[in-house]
Length: 91
Image (tube, rainbow, N blue to C red; front, side, top):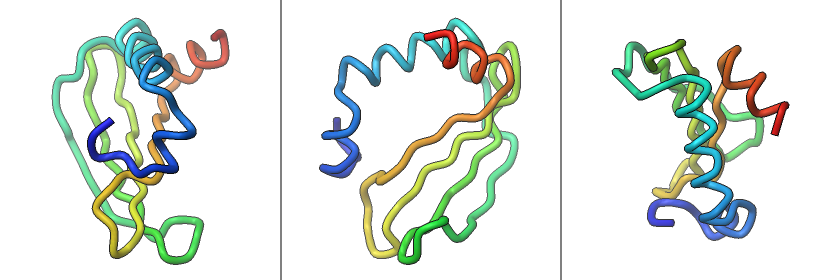
């Protein structure tokens, strides 16, 4: 998966990532727009979080992408939204 660190690629297979994509589509619908963004310190020193509020058809989803401060590959990827969280727990 292009743009993801080796750690991410080891932790999440391409098949698991595609399954996540399907869960997002089923729970939240199609992506429509980014409606907000901010940068925050990550919980781990040496990393930064880019936090996006995204409008999907069914709900707003908070997307957090974590990078090493000097890196250019995704080290962490998190989604947070009520319907999506419920669908993830049901998996």
